[in-house]
Length: 161
Image 1 (spheres, rainbow, N blue to C red):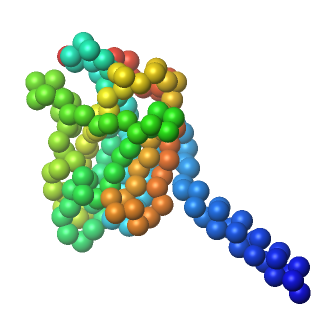
Image 2 (cartoon, rainbow, N blue to C red):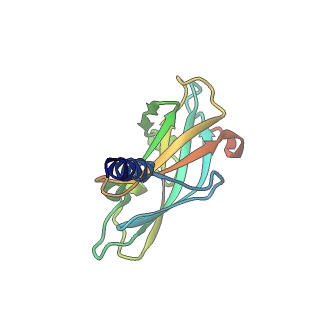
């Protein structure tokens, strides 16, 4: 009887570890993540160097509002970029060199509608990496995060302003 209980407890532990692993989807763009409140589709990434002092990685995505009321991406989801275990800070460009989609994450979107937005990450002080880890999660972390590997060979070459 003790062996059966031990085996059952072992199986419960194995399945609970598997459930905590997060979602890992295709590592080729576009990356797609679906939550109760929103659908996200990462469509492209590009390197920008508008200030000639280091690179920024700009990640473009489509946000579709699945709620019954208007909402905005900055309140519904979070995108994070990692180099190894280091979370990379997001930045905003000054208006004269900003991507057209910058700031759209704070524009209200009606239920069922879609908007294209972007987030920029400062990668100038990180070692040049062949890939970065991009995570997408619902803002309040109620659902599993989606994790993608952003292969820098897929990133558009530098865009100089």
